[in-house]
Amino acid sequence: MQAAVWPAEMVTPKHAILSDHARQFDELRFAYPVVSRRSKGLSIGVNVNPDKVCNFHCLYCQVDRRVPPRDRTVDFELMVEEVEFLLGLSQSGQIWQHPRFKGTPLELRRVNDIAFSGDGEPTTYERLGEAIVEVGKLRESQGLTELKLIVITNGSRLGEPEVIRALEGLQAGPYEIWAKLDAGTQAWFEKVDGSGLPLRQIVRNIIAAGQKLDLTIQSLFPTLGGQGPSDEEIGAYIGRLHEMLKAGAKLKLIQVYTTARRPADDSVGVLPDERLDEIVARVRREVPVAVEGFYGRNWE
Image (tube, rainbow, N blue to C red; front, side):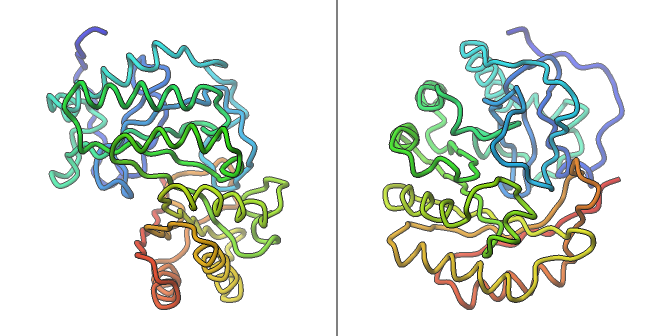
């Protein structure tokens, strides 16, 4: 790919950089860089669901499915080429000259990971295992042995043997699997994630994968019509975490956070910092796993 040359444009304000997770970067089609609050640096995203098809319908999702997708299938070779291109920009430091990233604080000017995520559920991509292997080869060839590969998943297919086999390819180097758990009860799960699946099945899937692979639980608690999850809901959520641990799931970290980017649904809001602090403190008290909390942000 050609070297990057960017026109003099308005620099993205510092306060907006962490809220900008746009899946399009210049002319690239399948790879995109974002500065992530949870990655604490630059994350190179890999969109293996450009068709915007997802088996969840999370109210807080920022993907606007009313807008037709640019691509309906993945050009595998181009996807790998684009990841390589962004790795080169990141290693050279040229990425920080782009108007979108010029305002990035110095402490976040580090490359943390390559993350399989995007506009749908990455475990539904039939070539995910192959993509993990190829991106892992890029990591090795560029001497980035400490760079993590991350798969961000809603957990809907984590119990399937072929998905677990694909994810086992991550074990060739540093990796994380971020599995979604946004609820403790079926009622809240249906409100927030709208999957039509039993929450019990998601829990079983996370257990199946967690018995073989290290997992990070990612839990987004928004407000819906101004109301966040109740104390009873958080108690049920903690009960699900205990169930996973008792069954032998290897939970390494729990991420508790709230909305920070504009969702497609206008009824979704941001949990106040004080309420997020309460939830984080309770999970820390009651669950023997490391917990990180991330505040939200109202979008402009």
